[in-house]
Length: 338
Image 1 (spheres, helix red, strand yellow):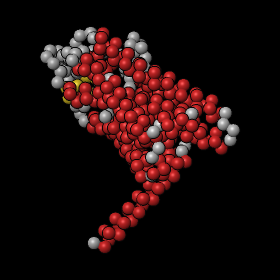
Image 2 (cartoon, helix red, strand yellow):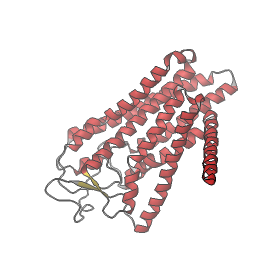
Image 3 (tube, helix red, strand yellow):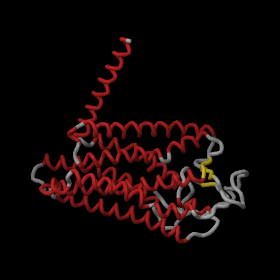
Image 4 (cartoon, helix red, strand yellow):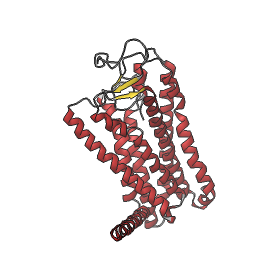
């Protein structure tokens, strides 16, 4: 989730048939990664593999959380919602990106562009809320274990999950509406592989200081406030863990929170690189690389981090594997008997 405001390069957008100097724009061209056809195919294959692995990895964790009764706790319910969010997060941009790797026109409709903008930013905001909620859950579980069962009841956990989804999808609604109401009369080439707010504001026929300020302020607040809240929560957790008398208890607490903290650093590390002041500038390649990383690579790493660093999750994943093998054997025996 990023907001950048690169200078408009009219020469790079001087492509016949893509935009018009008069009238309204009905579609945009996502320039993506301009390179040879062979490299486009390589990027398509590489991105497709990452996409499929991301869907499979996060899907397996959802199955584990749903099927294993031992994981029906607030921490894993939040985790289940988080990986479910990751699936839709990659689906908001990656399928269209894969199509554009092989397409010639690389066009996206006006409505489709703003729907992608809305869902991409909304799911990024929702991810920030869920990371904060997971940090809050670990803080109470470790720092206030006697009150944890009272605070994190099933109803409170449900309310927390719903609040994350609702707040995430409402957070960036106003900027998207404001940007969509701006006049776009050409050129219509977005030097990115997704519809981002910065390039869209640059393509507007008129200056829009209010839209820029609203977009930048809201994206700054959600990133910085959730990051600070998460860091403070885990700092408190770290102090509490160091005071535990048992070495095994400290190891278990570090193992559980370590995976969460790794995901936090991975996610915020990439968006912090992209989050600059409106007056700053990046090369045209840097926003694409950073956006590609946190839109595709980060959701791939998250299930690996959770499964490799958590004994309970590894046990649940093993049960999912065994159930899957049994289902395959049952299906195979039925097919052979027909």
